[in-house]
Structures are given as structure tokens and as C-alpha cells.
Amino acid sequence: MAPSSPNTDAIFEALIPNRRDPAALRKRVEMLEIILERSFTIPGINRPVGLDAIVGLVPVVGDAITAVMGAYIIWEARNLGMSKWQIWRMIGNLSVDTALGAIPLAGDAFDLLFRSNTRNLKIIKKHLDKHHPGTVVIDQ
Image 1 (cartoon, rainbow, N blue to C red):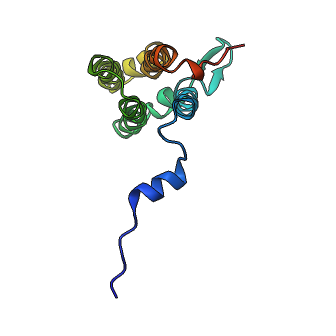
Image 2: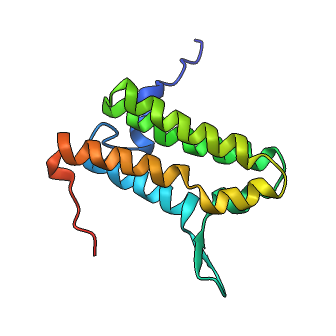
């Protein structure tokens, strides 16, 4: 008897329950944005940075890794049913961040200033607040 291939939907559901739930999606995207953009604070200038700026210091590979992580946010937005215009804006934000972030030294400084994942999170939050008002979280 040949082993059957695993059901990928069942595996994904086990890893990320409620993947279509807007409230759960909001939490996942917010957490990823924090990891990518605001994980640490640079002492002295009190500027928050995340993995996007830190891993981006590694030439080519670092920018590719953070681009894939940023693409996950866009994939979640697509699963939410956001408009093509919103998705293309998010792709544009990520593309600019990835392309300019790949430039040695100047790109690393650019990563500190241009936060594509934060911009994309704002687009998703605006959509969620309008179309799924039950997911609104009062920020403290």
C-alpha cells in the first residue's frame, strides 16, 4: 500500500487555525509587522528597528528573506479579499523597500526610514475597520 500524500489544507489548519477569521488575521499581521519593523530600539536615538533592517545588513540573502516575510502580509491581505488596487499598492511598497534596501549601505539606511510593512499594515487595518468592524482594537 502506497503512503498517501498529506492533505496540505489539514496541515495548514493545524499550524494556523482560523486562517480566514479577520480578527485572527489582524493579530497575525500585526505581530509580523512588529517583528519586521519594531522589535528592538537602537540605544541613543531611541529608534525602533526590526528584522527588516537587521537581516537586511546581510547582502542579497537578507533582503530576500525579509521580502518573503513581507510577501506573507500581502498573501494574507489577498486571502482577506482586499481589492486589486490595495494589493498592488502593498506590492509597490514591498518592491520599493526590497529594491532600494538591496543597495549596500544606503539601502540599510533606507530600511530604517521606509517601513513598507508598517504601510501595508495600515492598508489592511483600514480595510478591516471598514469591512470587519468587529476586529477593531483600541490602541493604548
